[in-house]
Amino acid sequence: MTTLTETRLPQHDPLVHGELMHVASHVQRFNGECMVNTLMMDGFDFPFKYGRKNKCRNLKGKQVDLSYYPSIEVIADFEMNIMKVVQLKVIAME
Image (cartoon, rainbow, N blue to C red; front, side, top):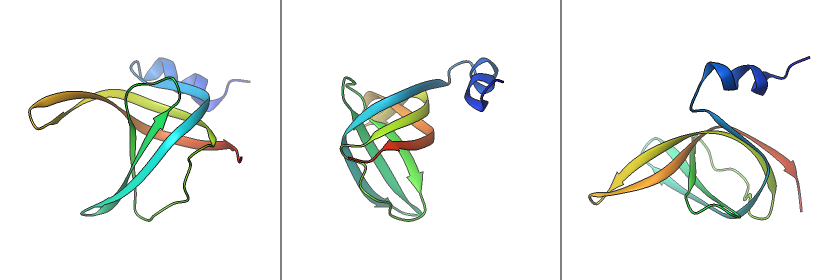
């Protein structure tokens, strides 16, 4: 039996799925309509971003499964690589 992730990956070419990723840093900030969450993962040099309507618990030190799209964000005329998270699942609570 195939999982939902296995069926989505071929349909959405740039979609990437990472399993058991360790969260090094988690920052939440209000941006007009929603809370923007920024995660930094161990072993990665770019941020993983997603939005929520409400504040959520701190994910620092947790292990998560992520599905995300690579993207580029322009901040003050500098292009930054970011990852837009479309699915997040907390695996282990430490």
